[in-house]
Image (cartoon, rainbow, N blue to C red; front, side, top):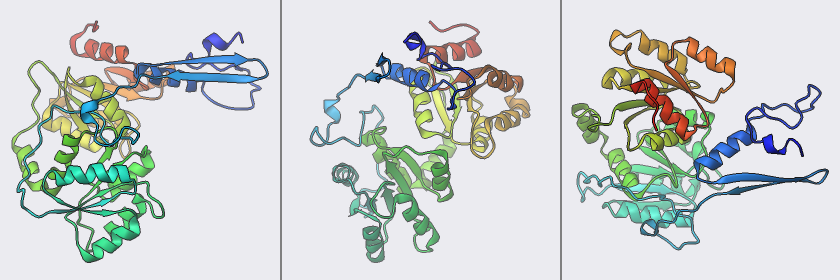
Length: 358
């Protein structure tokens, strides 16, 4: 009971003796509290000796009536509205066919309506077997693929599609509610997916734009080549190098409104985009797949035109010796995950402007 007020502290364990039978770092509850706070909520505990403990998390629920598509009891695929304009389809009468592979009927209703709304034909398969049957009859121009399905999952279906000559070229956009770990992310990268989008973290217009870009990549790549991302007036250009989609969403959300963001999902892409865009700041994840954040940092620092750009390390390694080790390589600052909003802004402000943000 005497330890109860401290159990949400970092590196705190109820039994810190060397004779403990179980391992652990004492970070679990601290991380839970930080995430609860980030979401605007609280976490608390009640405990009775020799009986057990009860943890309570209270989170606010935001409701966006404008974004409601189907009945309230069915969870929507699309989380929020957007000020982003809808891209014009290259040709509304181009007769493109999209194969949607999705077993959730609510999602099928929403996504089918969305795709048909920009003028494309939609074929629906509820599982891998139905998808193969449709492909035998009609070759789609692109696919929207869920990963969690009965029988063969989306990962296995994707591998088969990529290993078959007649479907290897078909662009695939992954739309899933599944939390993707690094191993799964590597599988998706190896099988050349066009984009990974989390259900609940995208709105209708963003998804429609992603589909249009998937169908006409040459048009938008050409535009991109001629029109580099430019910082919005008064908003410095920040390059975020992060391979975890959830972490990227968090960092982008924190930067939104204050900075213009460029994304890179691995170290090599980070180096390439640093050379291409010459950002005012780089936020570098340390535990990247392929070349890690430290290697990418060194590669950037070796280029004379990039040596002046400050680089902040992002890492879940929060121990003092980890921090000292990372900073010893020359990083300008260090931000620990999970990110604390106030600390995040203060570190960036200190690095960019030499002062704290209020």
